[in-house]
Image (cartoon, rainbow, N blue to C red; front, top):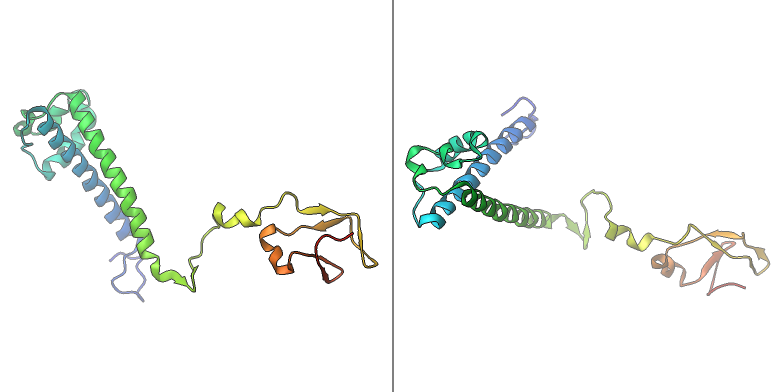
Length: 188
């Protein structure tokens, strides 16, 4: 455990632990994509099998930036014979990366939805968060004030009155508030 792990929560991960775990997951994830792209390229080019594993793909990942024009040279000699030219190699690697990206996005969305199920009380999401556009849509009005030059039952109403969003007018029964009274409909 790292030094920033609180003593009150044994077994919890601190910031440094999460950072190290994230870096390792990213390195091995990218190495997996590089290996799968090379394996797909080897299969598509001659129906063969890539003669390299994940440790060789980590080494190839380190050497690939220098060997962009001929990615075969980044791999061990045993695997170089089954790999195609750069165009097919990079096309296959890009296809695998795209599939992995879509899979990560779908998995992340599923994980977020499934991990928040216990956070709904009486049908209301209890997570603290910023309001989304969907949350704010019922609150939008054309202007903060409404022009009305009328008087209500001898009570002069200011010519500019605060406006309530249409979604909240049910609180007033569809009427207006003037001088502390609720009136039905538009006043004259």
